[in-house]
Image 1 (tube, rainbow, N blue to C red):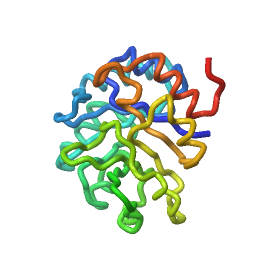
Image 2: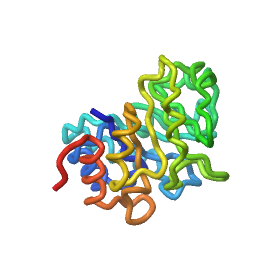
Image 3: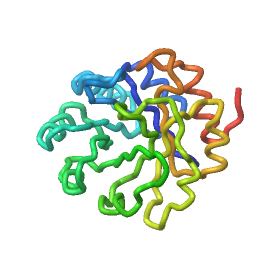
Image 4: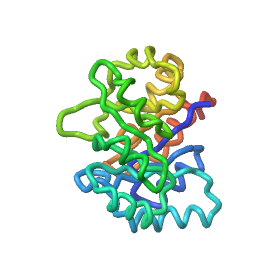
Length: 210
């Protein structure tokens, strides 16, 4: 079954709802320039509260352009389980993190499989390229490029322009290991729409709509 990541969470209410709806991964963005930015300490409070409630969902910290020491300090403060790297960090950087890494590449045409292979990462996330944006653009990329994925890339997460309306079609045609959504289930940046989150997860997992 498709792994679903709900990203850009900024409140306990939204995170709890994503968990209860069946999300497998939840993302917290620690990039100050992002419209969905959250401080590591605030995310840590949310994650700690969820764990006290028995939440098994893995939490992902999104980082870009930080020194290795700062990145590991963010990990420690927030308590995330995984780190998503958006800043073109090196393979050595990724291997030196205190948590496993999800490596992100923004795609125009071809996927840089040979470059990505150097990372031997926990997973790889392919998002839409848009100048000046690290993600959350709400635009799709040329998904057919995923068809040329070589062996060794079992965990590929597709992001960019996914919504409750197109996710079922995307999953059926691409058969990705995982999918990621932020803006596609929001009423405002960082504020999730509860009904959209629930429907997105149902559609991604092939469950009957309500």
